[in-house]
Image (cartoon, rainbow, N blue to C red; front, side, top):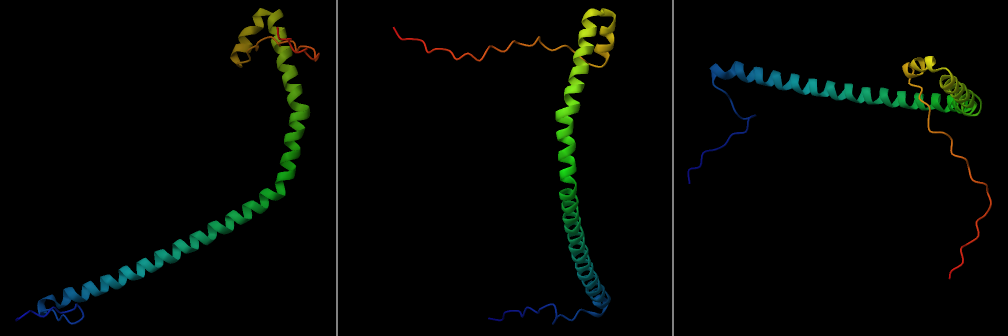
Length: 130
């Protein structure tokens, strides 16, 4: 029934030779708490900065999107058919002039399969069952 009393750290009075150690511990604890608070503030500031950058970039993207769409449409309607026509004429030239084929191989221009003729749009009659 004689239980030893457990003392809380605040009630603990260290011996004289450990007094300096206790003061260092308290200083270290305060420095750690201050560092933790500083890291928290820096992380919050970085998140706010990144959020502002995202908002700014979205506004810039919305402003530029119509111009980019117009450029893509222009490419698909005008430039892409011209490029394909030019490549097809190079392939045709390579068929008639075999000495030109190493240049086509160098730029990895290979003739595709010959175009398959599209059947006429005549509707087929359903087959009669026998």
